[in-house]
Length: 321
Image (cartoon, rainbow, N blue to C red; front, side, top):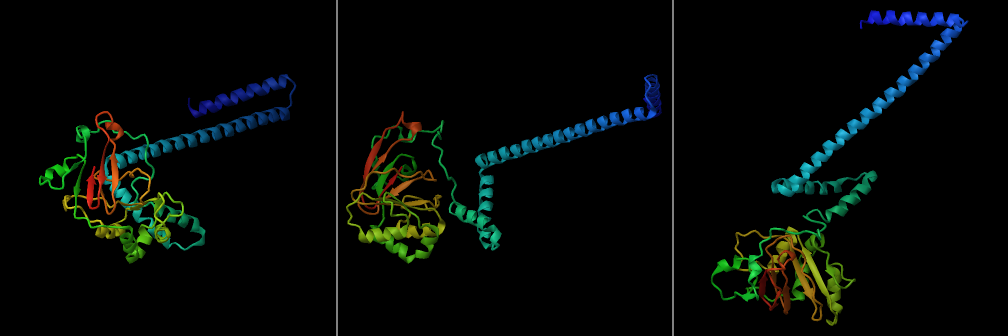
């Protein structure tokens, strides 16, 4: 309907209302007051309606943004877990942003600097919390399926067997290594180890770092059951430790090797312990001195097809599993 016709209809209705008001003996002032009250009610209802509309619009916009953010996070998560190049790029760039935070000097950001210092301990970790329910449904169990004992390949010339996946031991060129040798290596490279590999885990509460180990070794009677695990997962200390425990000769120079290394120190009466979960699947144990029994249990995926076996490791022997 055209605007002029609407205004004409509106004026006619107003006129009808005024005539009815006169029949009811209402003055013009009273009629005008009634009109004003009606307009006030309409105006208030319009404001409430507009505010509700704005609130609904804000809520819809927020929900749309939340859905978009959720979609981006899902895509990002899938890329990090499926597409290895993307995961490498992200990890590399996130790590590069940690240490620049230490150059901030404003007192108002001390809390931020504290957080950065805390997470810097874990900046090169690929996994902070292990999933206890992780299960590989399509794991191949053939390497251990028909294995009844750990074979010694020290005099075996066919190197293809070394990479077959079966567990074995062999005598390597490893030199005899004692706790004294490890402590001397630390003292010669103290600054590097203190910066990148100073913490230890131990069955003794007082041994938390390499300094505690030195004090303990000087005062120990060698009669306790102490087990110590020293994890090294950064390039500089790993390179130094390699001088004490070089790459076994059966491993090709062209094969990729993980930076992660563990030095296990056990006293003569130490109780058995579980080897840690390694980042790399290709794992071998080098015996520096003394001897120990290594028990190899199949993973939960292969318990139905493989059996538990054991081997006694002597100095200079390597166990690959």
